[in-house]
Length: 322
Image (cartoon, rainbow, N blue to C red; front, top):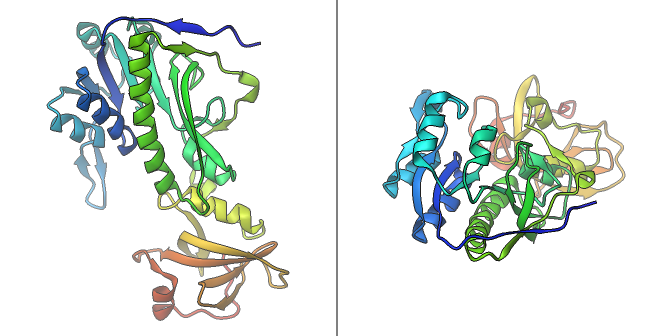
């Protein structure tokens, strides 16, 4: 049984410590800064090597913080004594956390008098965990949304403050849904902070019996099984596009698939068999129909349309993907 809703009441505009790392968190930081909240600092992950040259690059949240002249802190671990000492000196009224990437210790969660608020890109308690947007698409959900919670020591298990639902558009890929939910999450964070300040936000415990998990993605999660149905294959492609990307193999080389279409049909070919080149794309046999590959990338090559790919790559009727 869920506990009765409890009201959070405060009559002051809080000082906020913002914690976040990737591009998803940037709109949330910006919306607080643009609405004149006093952000005492931004905590983000350390700079990390990226790209072929492996040069160290700033996290997107750090770049945004510097544009607003907000102090940036980049601890290796938020549990370290040095950071905890800094945290206590900053003494924020509230912590706003969006896709930070580390689990907070109890000392941080319990310290702010107005709590630690987390923005999560799913309709909790469904799809708690590291990769909610990916798994929402991979599992073929038709709706999703964003949730703000009052954090506790569990992973995405805190009391729900506000939620906003949205329909998933037909064919919507991870990057497009990610960007939509990022902006929705920022708006919901602002509404949550303002609501807490006005005493207009209630907290509702999550029903753990309805919880589903969105675990971190592994390389194996991206492998296309051509013996599955076309809906499952298309959902996998959508849920991983453009990165880390669903993939298969052709003549021993990795072939990433960014976009594709499907058609239900009676199939006589072996699963993964390349059936034909059409205007729709390269037709590949699946369990209950055909997948038409549209955009792809062969190992060592650039991303391109299937038509450009076929100009420089010869296929034979015996070729089978997988």
